Amino acid sequence: MSRRALLALAALLVAAAVAAPVAARPPPEDVDGFPVFAGERHDYPASAVENVSVTVAVAANGTSAWTERATLANPETAEAFRENDTLRRLVVTEAFDHRFDHATTNVHARLDGDALVVTYRLDGVVHTGPGGGVLFAPFAGYGNDYRPSGADVTIRAPVDYQVTGAPSAMTAHERVVRWNDSTGTGMAGVSPGLVVFAPDDAALPGLRGELAVVATYGPATLRTAAGGALLYGPGFGLLLAGLLGLSATLLGTPSIAASREQLERAGFVAVLVAVFAWILVVAYPDTGAGPGVVVPWWLVALTVTLPAGVVGGALLALARWYDRGGVRSV
Image (cartoon, rainbow, N blue to C red; front, top):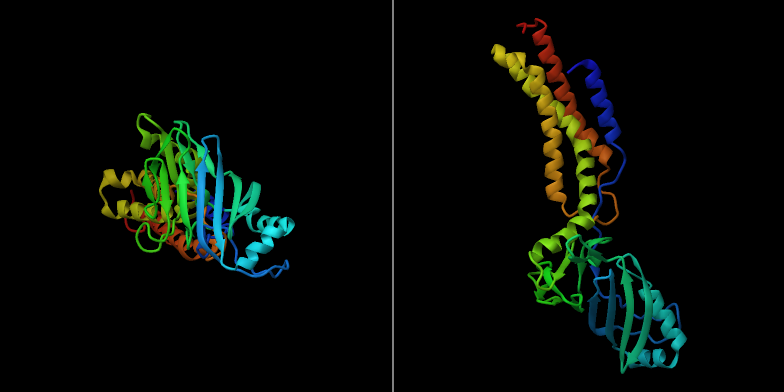
């Protein structure tokens, strides 16, 4: 590689080392939306909640209908909500105006004895694929690590659909997925928590469901792989190119030494392709981790990628010095 090419690669490496954050996983979040009704903002008796259930009816048209139910441990709180519709609407709206980083619509609440029942619609969490599969992914975005806590979660497939995939923390049977602290193994958290459905009697139902995942998260995964290849590839590509180039020169075999530059270019490109492929496989499906900064990418580039590139550049320079007659001319 010429000096101009080396300078271009160095500029590319610097451009890649932008100060984009590495996402940190936030603390696990509970699936149920019921708060501890403390009565601090509005004047009503405080109460904890018990017997929480979350039931979701997924629709193939891209929406989902949610019903959350919880028994108010303090009967006085239930009575206050029953007697004051305005208070009940205010408290429920504040608690359920957003769920899983999406705005809710059609929020309603009613009292069933001492149980508060909240219904709402949530859009943006159901995705369809080219094969007719449906992906339900409210737990796959912000947070990316949800736990049912004390809730009993039931997810119902769209009409004329069957369940084809769900996290191991959930139990699936034909058209229904159940999830609580007793399902799965250990702590029943999900990340990314994708639930997939396919039409009844469809050929290759698993593939149809996976196509919905690919259509939804494939582009994001490709961007992640491309960014990782741009960030890590040039430095380690230079390192491999330098190792191949110097090795070819030192071997002294005419046929190998004559193809030194081709070997260097092949090694550089091979690293870019390998890094891209590796990140693509590891990151898929890239649902997006929660916000936060652990280590800035530019720091990773300066401490890992740049040193590899510097060593690779030195090896390439040594190979050229060797070629020019430092020991042997090719």
